[in-house]
Image (cartoon, rainbow, N blue to C red; front, side, top):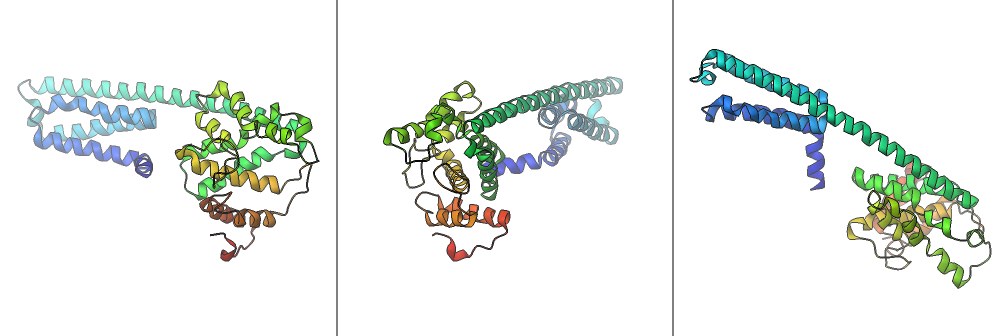
Length: 318
């Protein structure tokens, strides 16, 4: 269904033109009172304005007018009827003017809406950046971690063919997945020694705390919050946090891999960073257990592209 939707969107203009000509042909062959069906052309014109903007809507209007005028010129008797030539010409001209005016109005409204949407997106992206920077200020060891996890998650998601909406949701979840650590004690986060059971329990609450922090954005970030809550839930059911929703399970699995890789390849208070290829091998060995095998294979391909390191096929976990 998603592929069909993307196919229709990518070929919207061509389908619109085909639709106009098919309707013209149908009206010309099967309809007696052809002038009565002129109002039908508002549908493709308004549709073009709603989805494609003013320029395309006006183009659809002129295409409709040109096609109707062509048939009126070739077969005037089919359009004149009992009202007479003058009345027919007046009806066509009036219809054409209103069609163009409708195209301009709807297309303009679409462009204004698109501009407001862009402004809103820029605003919330600014908020996301502020939140991620604030998180980094809490723990100097994780500086850049959220951005790297977000970017790596997007690369894996694209390799797996996720749609743009899911990729954008995953990008935001990557940026904010550790935002709950703001409310975790800095002493616990920066502790180099082994954590106590109480401290581990406190750390494990950070997904819930992150969901609580994002509560004011719950309508906009509903799926983001769901991914954050489950980003320590592993493929085999271990880890912690709620089982991810079925439609978000793959997104969660992607974030788990990206988060683990960046954590292993970054210095932490309790250990030094591992080389990237060592982290890759650890992830491959845990494929089917902690990590989704499908995601591991996609990550391996991304790893090869990013590090230009040849990875033998037999190194991949089954």
